[in-house]
Each structure stands twice: as C-alpha cells, then as structure tokens.
Image (cartoon, rainbow, N blue to C red; front, side):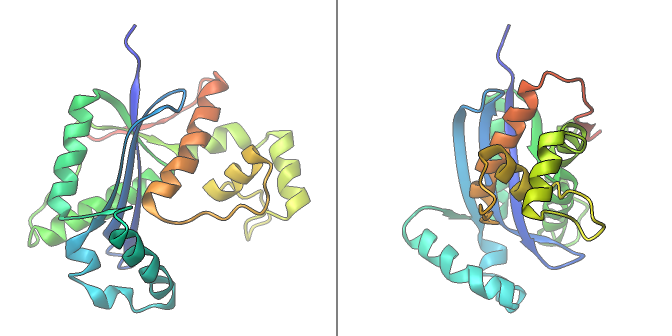
Length: 217
C-alpha cells in the first residue's frame, strides 16, 4: 500500500477581519512525522508592499526577527503567486492526501482573501478544487478534551481558557506532549508547523476514529 502523505500548513497574517498572509510555512510529512520537504516563505507584496500593516506593537516586535532570518537565508522572500505555485506543485508531486492546519479554516480564509486582494478584487481561490483539509484543532479536541492526563497537566500548570476549560491551543498541547509547561510557541509559519507535526503524529498513533476535516468542492 502506498504511503499517505500530508502537507501541514501554517500562516501568519495581518489585517484583522480582512487577513493578508505575510508568512507561510509548509512541510510535507508522512503519518510518522518524517519531513520530506519544508518551506518558509515571506510574502513580498504584504511584508514589503504594505508596511502600514505592521505598525502595531505585536508586529513591530516580530519585524527584526524576520529581517534577520531573511538576511541569513533562513526564510525565502517570494511573491504570493510563487508561493501558490509551489504549494500546488507539492500537492501533485507528493500526491497529498490532505492539507493540515491547526486552525485550517483561518488559514484558508487568509490565503483566499490574499489571493482576492492581490488579484485586484477578482474572486480567486488559493486552493485547488476538491482539496481535502484536516483541522488539527478539531482533531485535538476529540482526543485531549477528556483525557485525564491532559486535564491534570492543565490544572497543574494553570492552562485554562477564559471560560475555565483546559486550553487546547497548539502551544499547550505541545507543552503536554513534551512535559514542558514553559514552552513558548514562535508564532512563525515554519516553526509552528514543526510543533503541529508532533501533535498530528501523536493523534494518528491513537488509532481512534475521529472526524478530521472537510473538502473544498
């Protein structure tokens, strides 16, 4: 039987209710977590083309990190359409079974919105028709919500939502899996992909029947 391959995607975006992607991380993995390809793209049209989007304190703090990483060639500056072309080529080359994201609906919205804005208002889609998506947050919710050891880990380390429930963020699940309550998520595309990969592989090892995602028709 041919090995199933997955593309795990994480985006960072600005723009509030009209999100625009400036950082896009991608890794191609199998269900055991072996990384077969990885990319860290900075989107030129947003990162350099719309500097006013980075005036908040949050983005100003991240900006020097990105500039240093670009100078050191840890990330690659590309056009949005180059990023999309590489993404589509990866789907075909590796015969990707599903595109995975921790909050994949947000990634889909941000990438489609960026395509529309950069396409001068044309109704464009980043993802090809019939793309299969796995929502890693939804998968995590089904595995960890009632798991005693996870709930206790959250209780011991005060990891709760505003509603008082154990927090199912990628950061907190990774803290649980690595027994490291002090871990801090980077909130950069490729680096977040690498921690989400560990969550995905742990879930797949549980061999439980769960709802994974949806398809773009």
